Length: 316
Image (cartoon, rainbow, N blue to C red; front, side, top):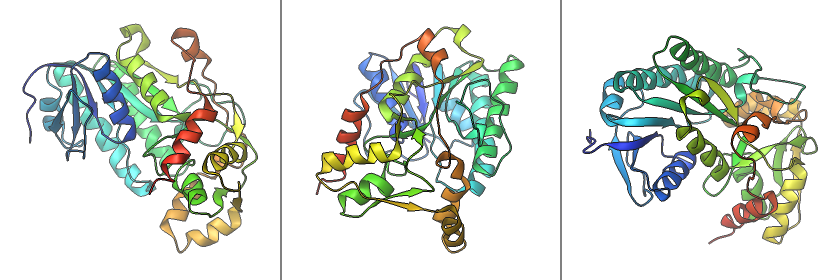
C-alpha cells in the first residue's frame, strides 16, 4: 500500500467521474488533496497525490487519510443490486471507522435512491426506505453514518444528487443508452416513459456541492443536502437537445415495463435497471431549496452541458 507522505487538507475516496471532479476543484482552489482507491486511475488532476487503499479496510483507509481535515466518499459501484447490498454497508462502516480513528469529518456523495418510489417532490426529510436492493443498500449506508453522527463519533454530511451526467459518466440515464446511441445513429432508449419531468444534474455541479460541504463549518454536518438542479425538463426534451448537438434526429425508443421485466429474465443489465422503474414512471422532481438558501443555486445551463456531453460521444 502506498503511504501518505505529508499532511493534506482533504481526501477523496473513489476516483470515478465525481471523485475526480471533486479532486480537480479542490486542487484548483489551492488545497492539498489525496485521491484514494485500490488502484491508481489512468490520470489524476494536477497537484493531487494518490494513495492506494481498499475501501473496505479500515486500517488501510486510516493510514491513507491520516492528518486529513475532511474526507469525501465518492465511490461508484457497478450497477448491481446484490453487490450494493453487500458492499455499501462494508464501505460505509470502514470509512466511518477510519474517519473516527483520525478525527476527520466525512462528506458522503449520495444518490436519491434511498427515498424509493415517491409521488411528491423529493425533500431531505423523507425517510430512508427498504425498497428493492439498490435503495435498501443506500438506506443501510445512511443509517450507519446517521448513527455515527448521533453518537458523536464522526461528523458527517450527505450530498444527494439525482441522475448526474457529463463526460465519462457512461452509465447515466443521459449516457450510453441515450446520448451514446444517438451518436451511433440509433434511437435513445428510455424505460417506461420519456415524457415525465425529470431532474438531473451535471457531474461538475455535483462535485461543486460536495466541495462546498467539505469546506463548510460543522453546523452544516449531521444532515443531508440536495444538489441544486437546472430548470426541469422531460427526458425527451433533454434527448432532443443532445440530438440537436449531434446533428441527428431525436429518436426515442421507449421500453414498456412488462417488456423490460421479460427481458430482465435473460439480461442482468436490464433487470438492474427495471428495479429502478420509479425513476421514469412518474415525475422525478428534486427540492433543493435548503441548499440554495444556505449556499448557491447557479448551476450549469442544461442546454450547454447536455450539448457538451453529447458531443463527447461523437469523437472518433
